[in-house]
Image (cartoon, rainbow, N blue to C red; front, side):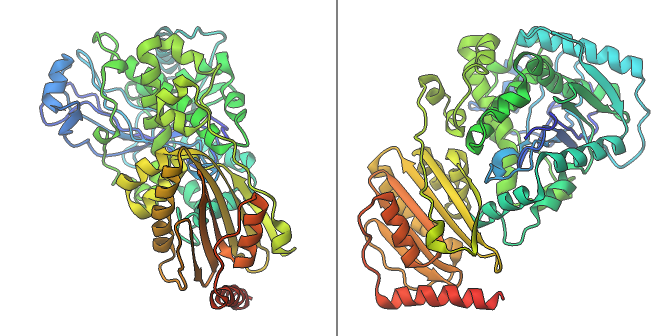
Length: 550
């Protein structure tokens, strides 16, 4: 899930000391850790100069906030970094690592030069003079020492630092992606995201991610080899920010063995994504503290509001093509992780943040609501009974996992909008899902079981998720509804939603007979009877689809 830690691409962050009110020193990272986090690369895309940021949060505009920190106004360059820890997908959190980190407002200091960011993708334009090995090593050692002082993590062993050509890094990324997950696993995860409505049907996620993640690689930290790579065409002055982020991972690796630490959450994708957010968010915090060094301020002084870190993604055609869910999944480990890290830093400092490795968050909910992490509130363990016998030998289970609050927020947001999705998802208290595929026709049956924190929340979820399912399928027939049971028929089979107490289940793509069987296995009382016409319609729809796909 993490074959290496960070690949960056970047848009030529020119160090301009010109003081102007039209631009601000800002860098936008969009690490792209999506899909199964195949690693932890972080790539950055070069983009045009960042437009003026009108508001920075806390009721202050760009000029007044800048003045409040006594930071020089500067021109801004931006970079989009993709953390390539991805390649697993929402199911595994497809959301899991498509991490985009659109991040950071880079305030710079006296004479400040806007440091280049995390690794970067190179501009396809004019070739840059190659970095001198000696200068590169000296700069990396200097940044490493400063990051060590910031985080309080002592350097326990030398960190291997290497300059690599773009082709060498690209080849490495592709090889590691193939080694991290088998094609069948990536296929299953993509199908899960499709079944939840997070990706368009037939979306070629595997190739899309390869194209996006290998677009313009610049550098990375590999926890397996414990080696830090930088592309040999990136100017040294543009590497310091990248180094601060990636070398934070190197220090964390020496103290906490980050790859094993993150994988220890498996097979729970939601818990693994939460750990990724700790890694990425803490590295972002260290990077920001590095950039603010000497100003008398730290990341704790800044308003961490994702809306203030908007950047120009137009220079990345692939990113523009990405479905909304993938973009959100890319951003979460960085923005969500940074917010979480800041909440831990404020009372406990860097020692408090390091202590999180000994007591990792259990869910993305704890990342999204740091108070729940501090209180120790753990999500419920939710299970789904095995119902293969109800389906027959032609059906195969291809995926099962946990969505978490972040995943359910994305599902609800897709059909209801963020304003309605946020409070509904916040009532999450545990879930699990399972996906079956029919071998010949490739039809899917998706079941999800969700626990809410209160019965009232389950009632609200029932009403609004019923609406989301109707929007998801568009055309359907026979939609009888009671206070806690809803179903309708589609050409892909029946869709069923039921809530009892604080729990809700949804079953999509099968017959009423199968649903009733699952309902009984859970131990719930029988659902309201379906009309014979509706049950017949369900069977006919399933048979029609099976026949059409032969």
